[in-house]
Structures are given as C-alpha cells and as structure tokens.
Length: 108
Image (cartoon, rainbow, N blue to C red; front, side, top):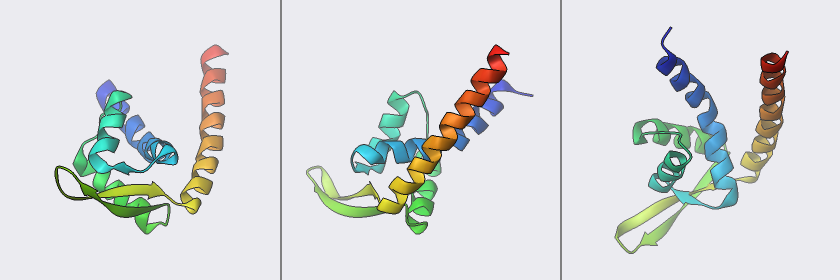
C-alpha cells in the first residue's frame, strides 16, 4: 500500500468537514477556500472543491451570494446555512469520537 494514497484518502474524507469549519466563520469565494485549506496544509484543487461545494449546496448545507469584485466579474461567495451549522455540530461530535478512538489505540 502506498502512504501517499492513504494520505489522499484521509484528506478526502476530511474535506467536507474542513470546508464547513471554514465557512462557519465567514463566507468565502472558492479560490479563498482553496488558499485557506492550503495554508492549513490541506492541498485541494478546483476540480475537487467545486463538485463538493455544489453537493453541499444541493444538500442545503450551503447557500451562496454574488458579490461585486474589484478585479473583474462578480464572485460567488459560499455561506453555511443553518442546516449546515447543525450538520457541522454533528461532525464535530464525530471528530471528537474518532480522535478519542485513535488516541486510545495509539496509547494502549
């Protein structure tokens, strides 16, 4: 098994959670989401992010609004919905449980 493949699969599994965590604090333009994730050492490309954003929007977890841009056409800013906030609270509980499980297994 390839460690890079395993790393990629783990990152994909966390991407939805990380995007919702970002959007909980403020609306973001897609390229800003990519940059923030990159700053956090979670590398994501547009071809991965846009389908995820569309799915989250279709599931009612995100909305969006168009905002004028000083550098060209209006930009679509993604906003977490109340359903997204509720879902994120559930993911937070799952993350804590998984983290405790991994810590337990590493230490025992």
